[in-house]
Amino acid sequence: MLIKVITTILVLLNPLGFLMADSVEPLTKESIVSIEKWGQSLASALWTTNPNFLPIRNWEIEDPQIDAKAAIIFNLDRNKILYQKETDRILPIASLTKIMTALIVLENLDLERVVTVSEKALTAYGTIGGLRVNEKLTVKDLLHVLLMESSNDAAIVLAEEVELNTGQLFVNLMNQKVDQLELTSTRFSDPSGYKSTNISTVKEIIELVKYSFNQPIVWQIMKTPEINISDHHWVNTDELLNRLPNIIGGKTGYTLEAQGCLIIVFEQSKAEKLITVVLGAQQRFLETEKLINWVERAYQW
Image 1 (spheres, rainbow, N blue to C red):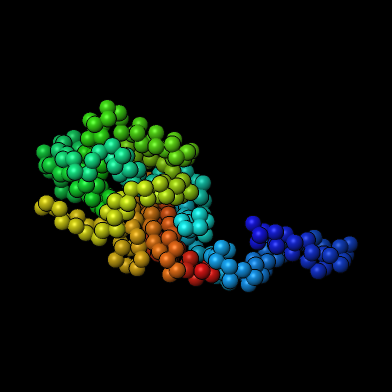
Image 2: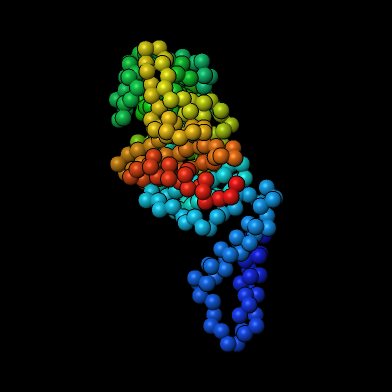
C-alpha cells in the first residue's frame, strides 16, 4: 500500500508535470510504468532494513516467460502473491483433485482402518500401484499410493470406504468442503481427477493448499520419494523432489484435457515457505523449476 502511495505522489509531482503543466504532453502508459518502477525501487531502498516490507521486487529482473495456461507463486508466510498469470481462469486440474480426496478421507476415516480393495475400483481408468482385488491395506497405506503414484484405483477404494462409513456420496463431501472454504470457481465430479469437470483456478488451489496444512500427513507423504509397503514399491511422480533442494512436497496431475498440472511447496533461501501452481502446462516440471529459480532472483529477501 505504501509503495502505491509513493508511486502516486511521484506521478503527480513529476518535475515537468508540476512546473510546466500547461506545456507538456500527458504522460504515456510507458512513462507511468517507468515511474512506478522507479518509485518501487526508491521504496525498496528506504525499506530494506525493515523486514515487514520484504520481499521487494527487483525490477531489473524481467518476468519469466511461462507457457502454462495459468500460474502463481504465493508467499505463504507473508500471504502475498509474488507472480501471477491468469489466476482466475477456470481450468481442469486432473490429479491435483487427489489433495481434496485425501483431506475428505482424513476427516472421515481412521488411518489404521483396514480397507479391502474392490473389483470395481480396479476398473478405474489410470489404474496405478499394483493393487489387487480383495487385498487388504490400511487407509494410511492407500494414501501413500494415492498421493505418491497418483493412483486412481486407490482414490476409488478410499471413496467407497468413506461412503460406507458416512452414508454420503464422496463427491458431495468434496463439494461441501469447497463451499465451506468459499471456493466459488472450484468443483469436483470424481475423487481421482480423471474427468475434465474437476475444475479450479490457481488462486483457489492456493487456498486449498493452505487448508491442507491442517493435515500434516498429506505433506509428509507427498515429500516421500519412494516407499515399500507390504510387497509394493511405490515411487513419487514428482520429479522435482530429487532435483531441487528444500522441497516440502508437491502433487502432479495430467490428463489430455488438463495437460500438465503441478503444485510445489518449497522453502526459498531465507526459509520462507512458497507455493507454486501451474495448470495447463506442456512441461510442468520445467515451468515450475523456472518459477522457483526466478523468484529467488526477482525479489530482495
